Image (cartoon, rainbow, N blue to C red; front, side, top):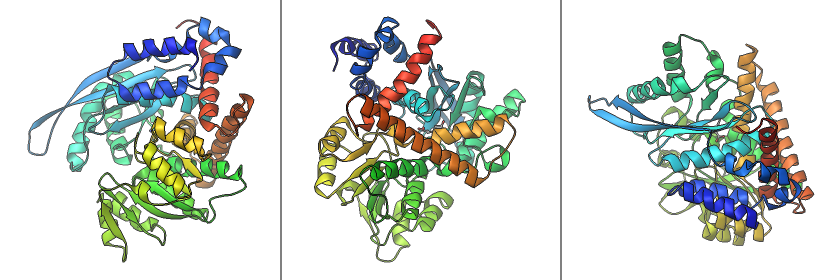
Length: 445
Ligand code: GLU
């Protein structure tokens, strides 16, 4: 790493002790930015990097609620408003027991660059709670969401900060959160949250957008090598919203997705995952992936183990951070891997990325490859602002254009900086320069 950036990195790491995921995200970005600072010494003079690594605002709050037995429960809520150079803070809420400040900050930091790459006017933020929705009744989830919003409402707004979903926060949770916001503020402010139901201000394609976008981005990478998804053997990790829609889109382009996973194991379905059945099990019944295998003749659920033990030509990690390490990457490479598109945020460890790049595997980092979700959130905000709603076809076309645009911008930037095909470099530099220029123009704030 560039020596000037090393010193800044060391200060950032020391100022934010114990936040391993945030450190990882920062270091990965810094490793790309040396050449930019050679060309733009003004970024160093204005301390753009130091400012970028310090969130504009961090909110941590108590979330009290009662469970169905009447017992009082306490969780911790977070909203990190990281950077508003390009627009209102924008990013999801994650409800998962692993959530702490370091996770929210890594996600918020990534979101700044991701949102910049979409070309839409949105800044970066992220939030969530260590609440675990798994096994909770609808009534418990509703009470939790109402309590969470009872604090959060004072910090958000369509021109301030616009949350959406992430792991553990889907349409049900956004509904409860929106209802409570409306009740407290007495405002039908559609643009305050995205991922809403289509009949009350949501956008068509938003539920599909992250998974679809990841596949569209990966298809563009494959085209640079004269191939496509047609005939590829694909492994997807996860079986939530992003995974399901990535599977659907990859198969619609002629691939066979032979495996997907959850936190306890995975299924191998050589005929190709039955998306309708998977949706039924996971989205309608809110059941476990194991039940998918139980209802599909000849398909077994592998308890424990890693989905990355299954050979594939394309891998789409769509579960969570650091789920694919160097060892798994090396094994996939031996199995004939040609491309990886990150549907989740930072699912590949730095070791994995090094192995993939060394082996010449096409690698699309999450901040570019999974930007379709937040991009479509920005389209939802656009529809809300104009009190309009667009057709599925029109919205999907916009999403496709945005993903192709992100791909092309990353590819062109990588080329411009002398590393053609390095999408990590292209995404980091492309996102950074846009935000840095805006910060410079807006003065020392
Ligand atoms: N949580 C998603 C992401 O990681 C979507 C955020 C949004 O739509 O605001 O980008």
